[in-house]
Length: 208
Image (cartoon, rainbow, N blue to C red; front, side):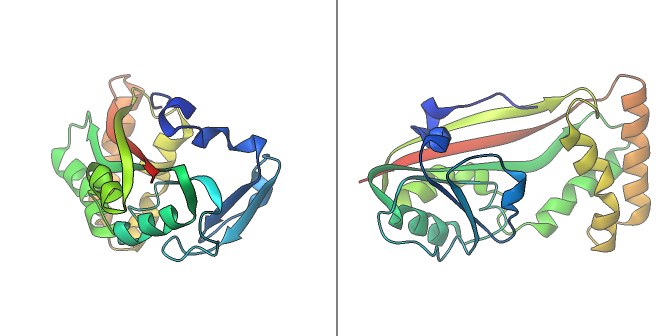
């Protein structure tokens, strides 16, 4: 679905399984993960239940778009990272470029996310927030998530179609527009003329 990025970019953040790991989120189910030496806890990214300088590296994956302000979250991530350690974030801009024939339905679909998210444009501002948190050697990269089939990866059908009833129930999109969008992209998918893309951005920095 996306270009892969590894530990070369995040300075070792993806090499966690060799050492003890802590995962903190608002909802977690540690049973679904196979990593050893890993503990999962429920917590708030703006007030992490950890000591100063406790970790070699800290990262968050599509969290800041939902919970903020980003400045508070990244300062807290930096606080629990040792000097010389890495802090990183991955975020996406949920604006879907889709090969739709019903542009009004597509516009209504994309409008869902500006209504629902805490910080819609956080992906474009990661570097600024990392620097404001006192991090050095800040690096950024952008990736294109792209598909030509709703079946290429489970994400596409799950997010664009199966979640539509939830979006409708939350009054984020009119049911008529939601159904029109689904009908349109299903027809394009069946005709092998479907495509969809969005941008993912990553940034990392070093604690002084």
